Each structure stands twice: as C-alpha cells, then as structure tokens.
Amino acid sequence: KIPEGKASHTLYLAGVYRGGHDVLVRAKMALGGTTADPGAQAIAMQLTIRSTDESAVQVIASAVE
Image (cartoon, rainbow, N blue to C red):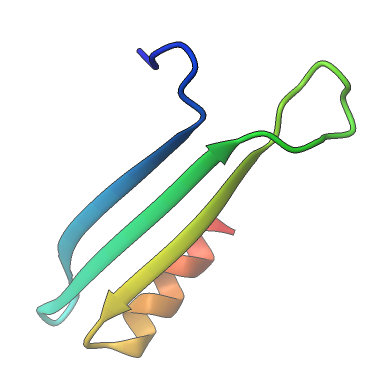
C-alpha cells in the first residue's frame, strides 16, 4: 500500500546475469505528468543499470522498453 501524499519510489535490484556477471539496477519512479486520457496519471521512470557485461545492460534495458 502506498502512503497518501507519496509521489515517488526508488526500487533497487541486484542479481547475477548469465555467465556470472553481477548486475545492479536502480529504478526511480515518480507519479505525475500528463497523458492522453485526462483522468489518468503518468508515471516517469529513470532506469540506471550497472554490470561487468555490457550485453546484460542492453538486455535488461530492452526488457523495460
């Protein structure tokens, strides 16, 4: 349950990708903005991904698009 008045959240994820590569993800999400539907709210997300393997970064980023 989201507390009333709370408009942002940060999610931290850590794991191991194929081949034993460490991966860290930070997803910052914020409520607000405009959408085509006047009754809806938009959610903005800033995604930061770090890994020792660049292909792991690309795969994870493309999964969110």
